[in-house]
Image (tube, rainbow, N blue to C red; front, side):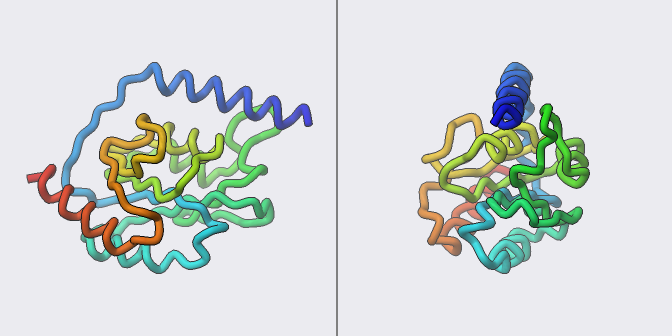
Length: 168
């Protein structure tokens, strides 16, 4: 469809703008966290709440990529889908737009493959420190933890260990 072409062109242009900007990487003790994940693959987000508790973080925002265009977002749980973008380009979801304007301490990219929209959001977020997997594109993370998506406990244990090393 022509609208999909317009959306993808807008995403490409925005990603190019973001790549040209220099981002300061400041690893400090995080007090806020955003987790980008595949909402279709992960049916429960309880493990993310456990992560926040293990890291001592109270302010958590979830951003889930889904194919369900009927999923509704809230301020702390945002769903990315085909209707998150305007037909001519630009963000249609007010909660996503507010998140992109705010500053966050820690971003966790908990997905295997980045589709265009979640890739854009991962780049565009104003975050001090980004964590991901080595299978993702290098520009999406500052620290890569080499575990599988199924090893949630090992992932957070390694993240906690590295954050303690980096922030002290």
